[in-house]
Picture 1 (tube, rainbow, N blue to C red):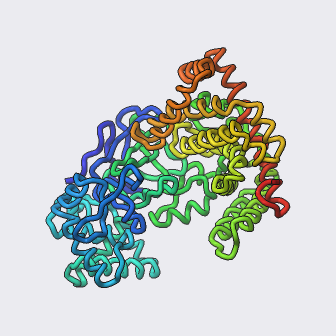
Picture 2 (picture 1 turned 60 degrees about the vertical axis):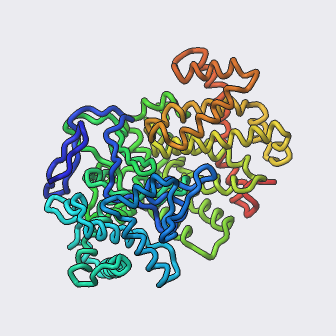
Picture 3 (picture 1 turned 135 degrees about the horizontal axis):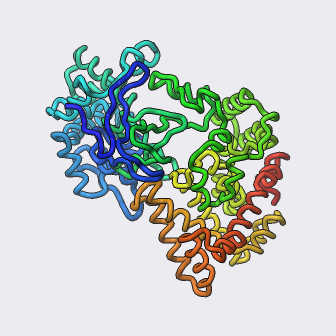
Length: 550
């Protein structure tokens, strides 16, 4: 029996150019929830994080949520007894079988985990052996998952690697080591590689795979109209723009802001070449942004200047698309180098991106990625934290609104949350007198001493709280953290008028008094800080000194 589509959608059959697809049968407004997937075929943490993530619900370990290991294998960990019981009983007893497997691994290799694909294949094989009909229909049935097995087989190196992984899954799973079983394991691996989602979130420290048969039918576009977010063991499919009845729902399988050839390389795993407008016309980020229907949503954002998004002030004569691709590839090669220290790497990367800076194409990768790395570098050193602030302002006003035009996209919200926390830190430095001691860059000190970091932080947090439920869910950790900090700010004495204006602005951005307060107390200093960003980096990375003059 084929899986049922979520309400408001229908499954369309395969065509000569693409596999099955999910289409809307009703309108889904931008930011709305299309479907929630709570019962995946597979949901497991990455092998290296298996000991710090609940192996059932995928909650990450924290001081508030400690993990406890299975008393049998001592490899799988859980956040509570309920999750442990659920995993033990799931699909006829997946961890009951896995428990023996990890005991075997420990006794033969001394390790407590398996590579994620190997563990996933072993889970499927064990569930099939236990008689799980849902798994059998998905992996063995005629209307089950597509695997592109023959396409994978054409790449001898990939196929040889898959054979090794399949053999490991069979051996450690304690299954009959027959040719038929090995072939079945390879086919299962192909289907997992083709259909599973990577739950990688470096900020949250999560990684692993999530596989749902219906969600896997959502096809790719580099100009997607939907996106997928994860909350522990749940996946949420949301509309990135308004989706009309009859329209196919599409997400991006790759980093859609990378150069076209890089995107096509990433899509080789899925054995198709994208023909979306971004690929067909080789559009850059600014060209995609200027045609985006999301632009009006930015009236309530840190980039409310819609004409700047529609008519960007860039000079493409200074850098061609071929040069951008070369810059990107050199940047990736530098990132992979093990012979450079952090500062050497930063200087080389910044020098590499000079043509993008001169063309004012600040949102074109790898420039935003390099600036983000510099932000993290500054945050890691208390003496340089203040210098992360103008860079974060720059990302939030010049880069993210172009690459992530819809202001409710989770990656953009996380950027705002990073900015809010930096404003808290810098505000505390100013209050204690540490700002002048730490920062000798006078233009930066001048802006910070004349501006109200508390009001700036409150405004940013109100954006996070407003868009957070559309970007993920009400239970999103980022949203909870933002709400907690906002409550602390609202409880501060002597800020009643500022909070009143910002509450009013959040309810009605067109309110004359509230919008004027936002423009002067929040937007102007944020833009002033952003305007310092290129100079701050040039001052530090252009002459071989530390990140900024100290």
